[in-house]
Amino acid sequence: MLNEKLEVTYDELAEFKNPLLIDIRSREAVNYGMLPGAFHVPDGVFEEAKFTLPMDRPIVLYCTRGEFSLECAAKLREQGYQVHSLQGGYTGWLLESMKREQGAHPADRERAEEIEKSIRKKFHKAIFSKFAKAINEYQLLQENDKVAVCISGGKDSMLMAKLFQELKRHNKFPFELVFLVMDPGYSEANRTIIENNAKLMDIPITVFESDIFDAVYDIEKSPCYLCARMRRGYLYSRAKELGCNKIALGHHYDDVIETILMGMLYGGQVQTMMPKLHSTNFEGMELIRPMYLIREDDIKHWRDYNNLHFIQCACRFTDTCTTCDPDGRSVSKRMEIKNMIAKMKENNPFVEGNIFKSVENVNLNTVIAYKKNGVKHHFVEYYDELNGE
Image 1 (cartoon, rainbow, N blue to C red):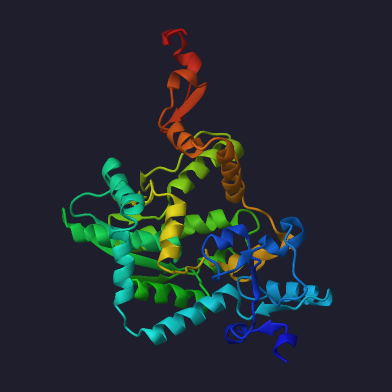
Image 2 (cartoon, rainbow, N blue to C red):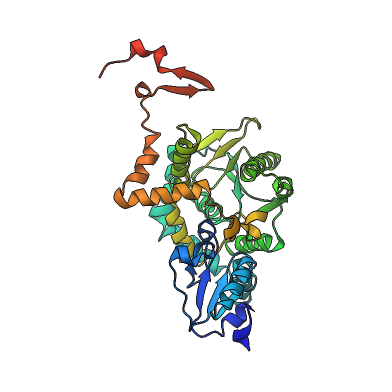
């Protein structure tokens, strides 16, 4: 019988009556999307989540690829629950959903037009206006620039690509765009999801491959940091080969304020994620962050409004359910900071804006020391020149 199966397919799930769908991936993973109607129990730890499972209702668990959810379902089945694991997990469901949509609307331009219209209309103030403001305020784009819009496959970079397309339609001055996707070793499924989303959203991507995931997989100390550094180097190199003078990354407002706090609490320094930077290793190249003023909640709202689903980082760690395994789970430093900010916001609704503005309002007369161009300056050097209270 169907209800006796531990692992079920997407089609079999549709036959269940009133199933309880539970996402047991990490908090970071669900930021990129969930199955419709699902509840989130981080890492499948029901005791900590204080989530009571019903004994008289079919329960379906899913993780990234269906590996950890299968183990978790087996344990709960032994306790008497009508529990199942979704075959293929979130990634499998996403691929299946894309196939169904393509089958129902082959070569349909209407979906792309709806997504573009939402940027011009519903999300103009919250998203496009802030995109344009960052470009103007930080002087991120000049006439005749050729920008490599770097797409990882997540919600931020995909939205950034559509915003650049919308900006180009305004045609205030000439500039060129290349939508650059680097495949550092994605699984076939994740590569397909990126390509399908690009096609759905009418983004003409240029894909090139590297072996970065293989290079960092066995690195024990800071593999994510090394991976990010290597990715950026590859992106600069390929962008320069294509005649670009800038690369654009999809970091947003929340990334900025989290970086400020991470630097203070874990790095012992006051710094921020800059809206633009000259490359030190690739002469004539510049990095820009045009999503700098856009809030992550607004990006999620745009994604959900358009019923879009994107991949996470999709490296071997996240792609094989490592991040949703409680036996080795660890909340990332960035997620710790994200949770901390959310907690502070409960008492002070202005805390996020204050963090952002803190690095714009630095008073050098009230700091012990600061660095400029790598040279440290101590307040005793200019103490006699300072005004009193």
